[in-house]
Length: 154
Image (tube, rainbow, N blue to C red; front, side, top):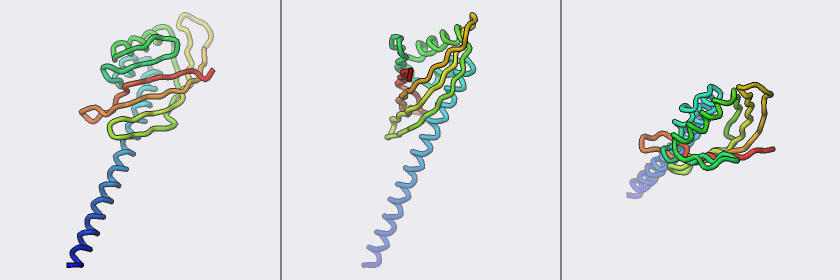
């Protein structure tokens, strides 16, 4: 009987350990996915692709850009970025410095370096900022941004 209890305890411990290890791998995979989304958004910004940025937001997402009213929803977010691309050639270097996942919610804290050149002519403008994205896992397993806020380092 004692051997069966020990075998059961060892077996249970192995199951719990494997579940715990799997959870860590899942979090690592989520972080990798969220980081890849950030890179896709940066590429879309560099390509002047407003729809390519907006698709990574939820339907009711909040975009809180400095010196602008709140933009709510994918359509408003796409229009915000399109207005930038209509007026400027854009270049962005950005990335997350920290990503945390807790269940179906996550945040990414990052940096951005932006160069914009007016299409109407003029000098290139440079700015640096810091940002925070809140993301939520969707019912299909994908991650989308619910809140995007940033401010300048100037």
